[in-house]
Image (tube, rainbow, N blue to C red; front, side, top):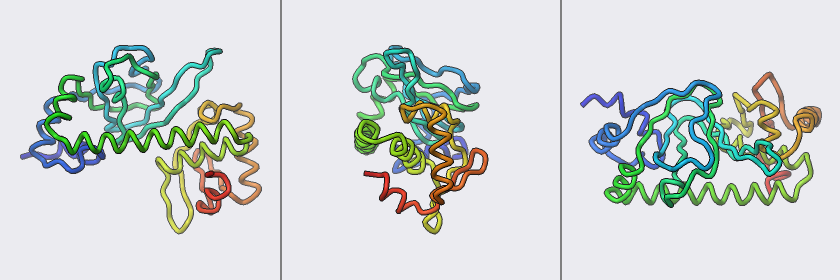
Length: 229
C-alpha cells in the first residue's frame, strides 16, 4: 500500500493510534481542498456540515463582538482541526475561520465523521481529550484576560502561542512566526499600540528577544511563573 497520501493523518492527534488500513479508509472518505490567504473557510452561523483538518498552512478562529470588532479566539496550525462543535451538536457554526496563509485542508462530511466515531471508540476518546484540553485552556484564558492588566493580557497571549507552536530548547522558547500585532491585539482584547509597547517593554527587561516576526522567551519557566496564573 502506498502510505504517502495518509502520512498527514498520522500527525493528527485523534488519528495517531489507528493503523494504515484504517487511515486509508479515512483518507478515501474525505477530500483535500486548497484555500488562499485571507479566504473565509467557514462563517459564524453557517450550518455545520463538515469537519476540517489542517494539512498545510495556518487559520484563525474569530468572532465578532457586539461593536463589530474581531475577537480572535485561536490561531490553528498544521495537524490541528476545527468544526467539531457543530458536527457533534448539529447546531450552526460558533465562529468564523479564515486562512491566515495559503492552506490545504482535509475535509470530512458530518455523516462520515459521525460514522467514524461510532466505529472507532479510540477516536472518540481522543477527541474528548482534545476538547477537554481546549475548554480548560479557554477557561484559563478568559480568567486571565478578565483579571489582568494590559501587560498580563499580552503575556497570556504570548504564553498561549508558545504552548501551541513554540519550540523549547534549554529553557528558551522560540516562536518562529508571531501573528501580526493587530491579530495579537484581537486575541488579547487590547490595542495594536499596547501590543507594540508591551513587547518592547518585555524586550528591554530582558524577558524576550524580537527579530522581525520571530520572538524568543528567554526564560520560559520564569515568564510562565510571572504571568501564567
